[in-house]
Each structure stands twice: as structure tokens, then as C-alpha cells.
Image (cartoon, rainbow, N blue to C red; front, side, top):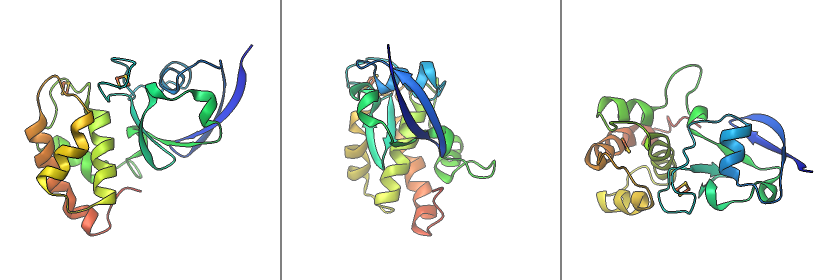
Length: 161
Ligand code: FES
Ligand code: FES
């Protein structure tokens, strides 16, 4: 027997029945079909399950779904506006900041959040902020270049949301 919770995911209210021990990660992927949220380690090490929960970056494998009833969640699916990719998404493409793409949604979200909070981060600040995320393809250099490039849009207030 589960419990009904409501989550606002990328601006859309969704109700879903969850078990007490179900992870937010699994609810997002398996029940709400938000597939940009990746499952890799299930223990807080890779960072690929990252979402923005009530305005904060969190690893969704470390959160129980029942604990976040009523919350707002932003995933990479929610970054584009009116069919146009967000500046940080465009910058990732322009700089080739991905290979297999498995880690990309988490890096894009974390980069977006960083630039939203600090539109002019130093390289050290970028590295520090992304240190909890792992890219097995090793595209870190390109990711940093993409963030530097996208920063001008955030300085102008042209952030996606
Ligand atoms: S799946 Fe959550 S940190 Fe790896
Ligand atoms: S692009 Fe392949 S894991 Fe990052």
C-alpha cells in the first residue's frame, strides 16, 4: 500500500503513489518517466541523479520521495523555453561538452544553478561546484569552457528561469 504525493515537475503538477522507502530518483525515472535524471551509483557518489529541488541542487538518490511531498523539481527537460534551448544547453553543444551524454543533464543543471547564483564564477569556483559530478568521458575542459561562454547570458539576466 503506497502513499499519494504531489510533485510539481518542470512546472507541471503530478500526483504519484510511492512506498515509504522509495527514492526520489526511482520515482522520477520509473513512475514519472523523467529520464534525464540518470541512475548510476544509487549512493551519492556520481552526482548524475542531480535535480533542482525547491531551488537547491540535490542528488535524488539520497532523498526519499515521501519526504518531498509538495515540492517543486526542475530537471533538464524544464530548461528550454518556448521550444528554444537555454543558453547553457546551447553552450554545451557549441563547445562539444559531451561525448556519450550520460552525465550531461546533471552537468547542465549544475552549471545552470551555478550561473544563476554567480554569473561570473572563476575557474576554481566552477571546478569546486562541479566536483560532486563524474564524467567518465572526461569532458571537463569543454564543460568549463561552455560555462564561461554561457555566463554572459546570465550576467544579462537572460537566464532560462
Ligand atoms: S545515482 Fe545518485 S549520486 Fe549516483
Ligand atoms: S559525456 Fe559521457 S559520461 Fe560525461
